[in-house]
Length: 270
Image 1 (cartoon, rainbow, N blue to C red):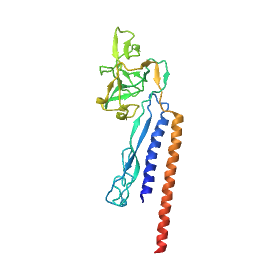
Image 2 (spheres, one colour):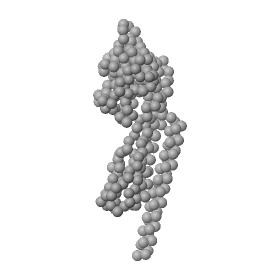
Image 3 (cartoon, rainbow, N blue to C red):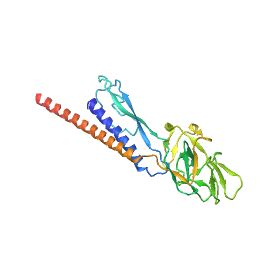
Image 4 (cartoon, one colour):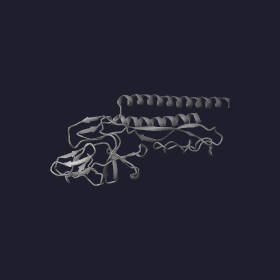
């Protein structure tokens, strides 16, 4: 297969990855606190390698996701000209504010501005913008998945059966107790550090946390943050990606037909 066909195949695979990311965004337009993802694209310039063409056992089957560069792009021909191929190094979470929606439920909390709630999971600290909380049997404030919501001290919040009050700065009060119960923990994280961990939470290195004690915005009790995925934009991007994929497939078919024609003509000359 010539370099043109390899370039078209690689382009089609990268476009397929982008369509998967866009489809996931569209599937979560109604998910509380969802932050849409985007795939980053870059160029990969080939360098000389040991073989003119890949061996029969080499394929794209090892291509798992962004960041993988399959053979022959990672080991191109010694006598081939350097060629620039598309690469998809990673996906990025876009921390754009979603719309705040009033629910009237005192256990619903939305963050306005930067930052994440911190929750305790069996795998360690995780981060979410989904503030649809509940009270578990132990009287602890938890997420829908049952993860403890943490306070600034790093411990669970235990309102019990009392009415929980949450001020804009995160200060927690109880209807039947004097004084406050601490403050909700709110931390910022770099977009590039976020990795989806399922159940509407992210994982990130804890040393990447940025304390947001007096940051702009704040907490809004009785509200939830909607998804920041935009249906119209997402559908437009899906159409664009689909057209690009079709163009790559047509290029592959055209180049394959040209190879077949050359093979037949060489056979007749022989």
